[in-house]
Image (tube, rainbow, N blue to C red; front, side):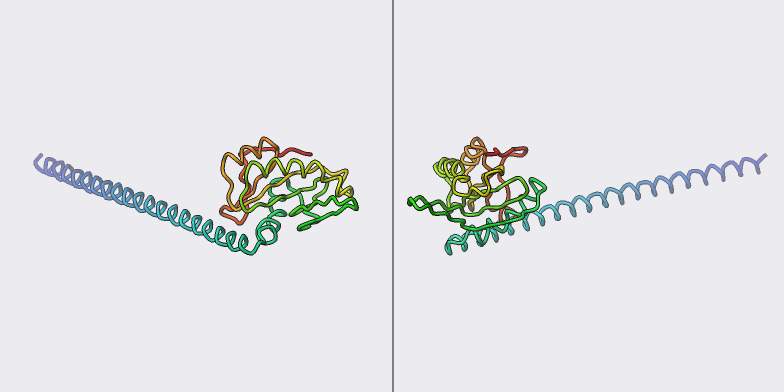
Length: 206
């Protein structure tokens, strides 16, 4: 009988040691898991901070390019015009067939009109006006320019016109005013030129 009791005691001891070992292992596993989660969280925070820093550096670099182009008077050629085909592709899924810069037309009666950039893509014509500083008055003037565009360029008479205003930086109230008029608005962002309209905005077809 004593032998059985000894065996039972031994079994209980083994079971207790097993339970203790399992518990310790579980505690170690949980601690290691918490440590791993903390490391991953710290890594994600570092990556987020790195991305934010790179995005800010991109903005600052683009603004510097913009200021240089502004001083040289070549904002349209250097910043806006090269971005239009990309924006047309992204926003309308269309390939630009023609891109003209500073397109000017003069009539014999003395009337003259110049457009900073004009892009053709299938049934659309994208007409751009670029300002070093975009104000509400420029939006009003652009409405008049759009309305007479076909008169000066009758070869585009059958096309739908999309108006695009661009500047290095545009105040939020000016963006909203331009949206009411139906215009797309571009300015410097993470990329040299990006759309600043409200998400889901549909430009007016003139």
